[in-house]
Image (tube, rainbow over all chains, first blue to last red; front, side):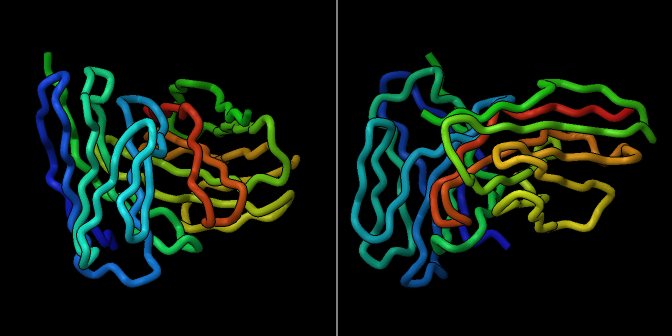
Length: 109
Length: 113
């Protein structure tokens, strides 16, 4: 059973920030929030993960609310190559990755 | 750096024919290996995982099997393909079982006719 809820699709203009939301209201204290993305006909690609604090890497930023019931993945300057399905996954480090249906992000020129 | 390979990239097979998909990892030792399947428009379904040579755990009972004859080689097989076996097959690896981010291969697109 998926522990997260994501919108099925979103659009974003090229060069603008893409903000992808994820609800995980039943998250437990030891569960991390992971984000992967899958570009069409390719394998999923790890983006970022976090537990409580906001995280940033070269690909994206992850903002987790204080109650940890939701989070937002931010792609600061979306490009056409960021068009993909984005998966938000909640798991304990020792759990399997369970992929839901994700959010299909379409970046347009 | 580590890389993961899968072949073939695409495959079209008739119903009832056998299947063998191969996955190899380079640049690491003792990886944990995983097979996933993604049906058209669906999420990823974990099929098998392996923590070492000859050690296979099955997640979903079906007509597929997996083997790990060498440390960095993972093979997905079937004796007789079904139409429902069509999909995108992905191999992945981690350093530890479930304890790290998973890195996926490029995938094999299988069409069973």
